[in-house]
Image (cartoon, rainbow, N blue to C red; front, side, top):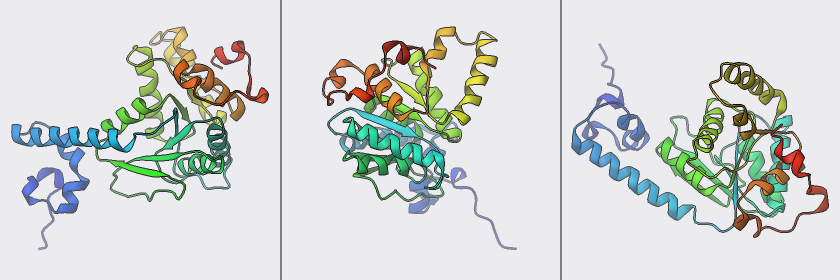
Length: 265
């Protein structure tokens, strides 16, 4: 009878191949209680990963991170919307960061390159590796999801969330939670792709707000729009003054009233 290898998470580090050791770092870390030596090794790995992130993401200028699914092709409406957004962000003076993969990520990076801007891919090592898209100035990979999350929040002044899966929803709601709990300065979070996000908005209002698990003012933390011009203007109006002052002056066509930008709809 052929024998089946035990899952990597069940084996000691010395029993793992080099590839398994790299690929399953976070899985072993989250597998449960371990001896102190193993946890100390993980702590050192995490610390070094943070240091690598600090060095790799040392760039000038304000950065906007765009999230969204890797599954949309270049002919899809959401791909075209993300591409237009990336270009407008770059023309407005922003660095554009994504997960660095295909789909929405590729579209936003592609648009940013077309707009003459700097692009960054900030990826996570996954069992099914996704290749970096060809529109990146730099590409950084992380082993731990939580380290990547910290880097994205730390080095971004705004998030734009396009239609996506669990990962996109996770990033969006974690950012909103950090703002809600006053753990980070309030910065713009924009949802684009209204046919998709309209359903989420309905859930938030009909379930969370109705059951009073959030306050009414929390609804305004997420701004919904399918207008690239409005999204960029909303971001510019919402970022800290030190970043806003480093950007080129508004074009007249980008200007929106404070009332429009503040209503959160």
